[in-house]
Amino acid sequence: MKNYYEVADLLRLPVGDRTYTIPGLSIDGGKTVTALLAGELKDDPMSDDEFFTLMLGTAYAEMLEDGVPKGAIVLAAQASMLDFRSNRAAAELLWDEGGRPKAPEPSPASTPSPSTGKATSTRRRAGTSGTSSQKK
Image (cartoon, rainbow, N blue to C red):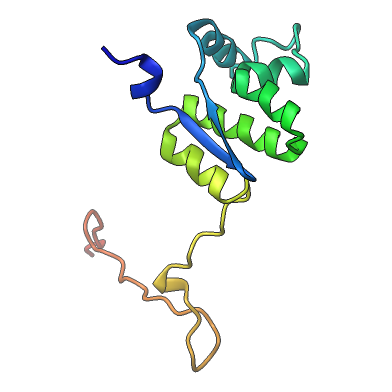
């Protein structure tokens, strides 16, 4: 039988020459993150080290040892949080965009017209359903 870590789909984040494997949250860690996001830990704040250890597990100590910049550690923690709360695709997108999401592509209806430089749009006629005219 294979070891869990051989078959698990763990979050892997490349930094420089190395790829860090984020082990995923424990059950208690998941409860803590859920409480944190719900604002239930306001009276008991955690330090940066505690938060990074919670979100990155052993990868945090490895990153510190390797001299990874704080910005990369923060982004890794954000990606781990997104992986836990949303999904892997969202976490990878955040990582790939460096934490700076791209602006959405403009829709064809708001694309500037080549002749006027103003946005073009097609107006729809108002429907008559549900309206009535007064009879005299």
